[in-house]
Amino acid sequence: MDFAFMRDTFWTLLSGVPLTLNLAFTAVALGAVLAMLIALMRMSGVAVLDWLARGYVFVFRGSPLLVQIFLIYYGLGQFRPTLQEWGLWGFFREPYWCAIFALTLNTAAYASEIIRGGLQSVPAQQVEAARACGMSGFLLFRRIIFPIAVRQALPAYGSELILMVKATSLASIITMMEVTGLAAKLISQTFRAVEVFVVAGLIYLVLNFIITRIIMALEWWLSPHLRRPPEVTLPVEAAHV
Image 1 (spheres, rainbow, N blue to C red):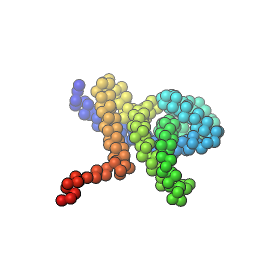
Image 2 (cartoon, one colour):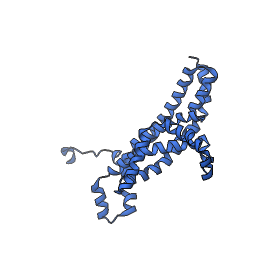
Image 3 (cartoon, one colour):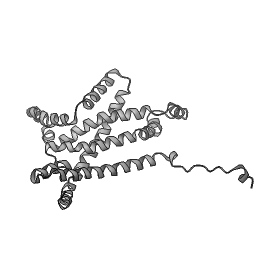
Image 4 (cartoon, rainbow, N blue to C red):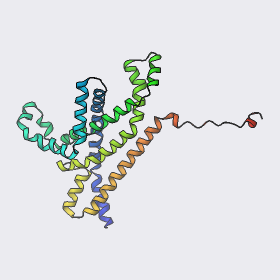
């Protein structure tokens, strides 16, 4: 391998990292809001809302993200007159917004199940204790249910964030020049696929390593009961000295 070329490739691909992180974190942030809504629909007890949420999750979890990006970017372009009439063409003609839209819809389907699992994992005894103390409604959700659910869902949600960082590589198929897009362009110019993709893989590896460390720090911060020092029990003989 040509390490001088790989060094230059690294600096070239590094310029795509801001766009990669922008796509990933924007999609995850927007997807979290939509996922919460879908999770609440699933748990609402209203049959219509429940089946709508189930259908959404089934479609976006059951079909490849690549197909979803193609359908949104290229498929909706077939309806340009209608989109122009509705004032939506300015949004769907931009690759960036189409990528954000596709990634958001996809991650929301997965995240909704993560959030639903977190909400359902809250011990009923703690909810009953909070109600006995006079909490109800939004106060109960904010002080008891939501913090516990976040702690329970954080490991799985961290994995979803990592998957989204890697999924941004698919945005390169609609001309987005993130890390993979720049790698593909560089390969077409140099015909040195191995070195370029090794460097691109290392960049994704470093990004996801940093994300995992941040998630672990959040888990530690949200688990004070796990970081308390163990109580030292003195032997009976020592206690009488």
